[in-house]
Length: 244
Length: 345
Image 1 (cartoon, each protein chain N blue to C red):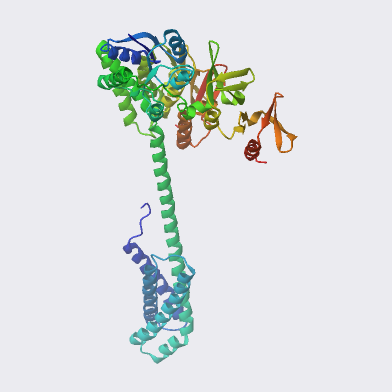
Image 2 (image 1 turned 30 degrees about the vertical axis):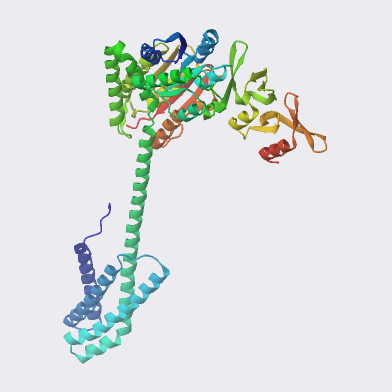
């Protein structure tokens, strides 16, 4: 049996997928979820093979939900928004169904996935590029224990590299997120955040002072007293942004 | 064109009465100088007819005059030439009608005076013609400017109103698709609601003012559809005082605000939400208040001034030329949008 979960905030949209799935006996719906929080829990609990995922949902959208999952299952996006399509395909999502979609289109998506699955050629979903839609630049969704936390980017003090993860430092401590520094350097407003070091991206609102450390080396002093190193090129970038 | 050119007949009549008037003056002056009435009248008629014809021709030739230094110099030279031409014709014609040598001597003696008079009169007509031409041009350019502004305003209004979210349409169609097999009756109802709503959206004229009652009944169609999609979470509460229902507002103004409120409410919280719409009359203005819940800790700041509200703001400004008719504020977990619609009786 192939386990699947439907995640969509509109009950009727879920009932349509449920109806379409009736002719695919090998697929079993183990749960239906009305938002991304439920989705994260349900995926952790059931470890499904396939999920049907809406994009615009309460609190966190479909892309943000996927970011919270360590080993995401295969994803078929179902949405009325066509502006995400290209990005979703770039991430090897199995398919992207534009609402309203026909039974034929739906079957095609399922069947081609099943065929690929049998030949074991499914590529794991790569989400690195996915959340670059403008709305998502304004916040970062992270998981802390069982809680999901939405951090508006203006509340971020700085981002620090940490092996395969980054540490997102805020007034309430730091959060871990499996992303790269270059990813955040790309998606966060570069007039407010500056990569001042190979391992640090700084929110310039938080900067109070730049202190010389030795010849050609500096430290950035933050409002809360934290000191972080400035690389030579980082110092130059910071001066550009601050206009000094 | 708003101000049409006076007809040739009107211009001609003006010149005839103008000429006649000066014939009388001219004759009277010469008569006073001691000549007979018949001689005076002949002299006056010949001289003034020549002059009037010359002025008429000159003013006609100026209809497409444009003001440049070169043209002005040309024009002054032309007035001098025309004045000299008139004197020449005068000297040619008057002896034809009046053969007395005394009189011809008088005519030759007053030549300089006559020439100056001709020139002054011609200049006078030229100045009148010029001011009339400039007045006409200015009227036209004002009119053109008004037309252009109106055109761009109309286009902008149409543009702003076209912002009906296609997502709304596609998601509604998806809901209908889901209802078709399980609940065909509800599917049919929803198709009906969607059609009525779209028809209402299409036929409305931008500048048209509608009563609040009409606007609310159109809005109700929209809300009914949204409730089919989000019925499990969405509640609406509409209260309008009796006197407010008859007041007017630009058509389809409320829908984008309510759409914004619903989006805000539904996507920013997980709970059931209530959208409330209240309409009252205050200082003869129609006041409409739309409230929706939101989460101040996670709402991204730019959402509050999202496209929905900006376009409403712009529309109100274009219709009423006032920039403070739309206000948005937040009170704890409620986002409140207030509209003030002036009533011009």
